[in-house]
Length: 194
Figure 1 (cartoon, rainbow, N blue to C red):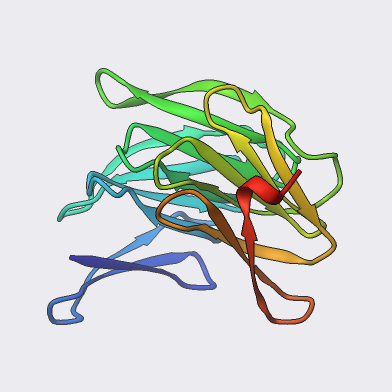
Figure 2 (figure 1 turned 135 degrees about the vertical axis):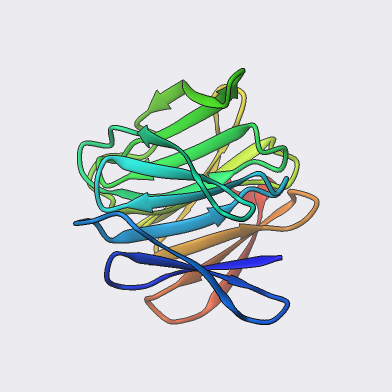
């Protein structure tokens, strides 16, 4: 079991959770990490940088770099997430776009869909798959959006708070949003968004 920590300079440190030993320091010279995520299937470690690139590492020692994925968000990549199977990957950037990627034979990632999901200029903060992979949540400083993964159809919007991070309940029925406006955690029932 491992823990990956993004340090404010250009490093991501990977530790063993068994003895808290530093196993590897990963550096992408000249860029700062924005988001770090392990895939739930334990195969990948994704690192989003303040560039157009996401580094995909093998999630087992020696944590070799699998590939550099050019996500082309025109500015910095704000957040990333893997679905529960480790075959779908989500990226969102400061360009107001969210992109869905799939893994193909040979371990390369190919874009399935790219769209501007939120009205422009809302400063994206996070993107997450629901546990069943049926839905995507997408947070901005103004609103919390939900979409279906299959076709990016809107599944509801809640607004009015500075949403910094979102998480799903295990049964996909609720989305939790942490805000920086009043430092509270809000719970929304997905069906009640509309």
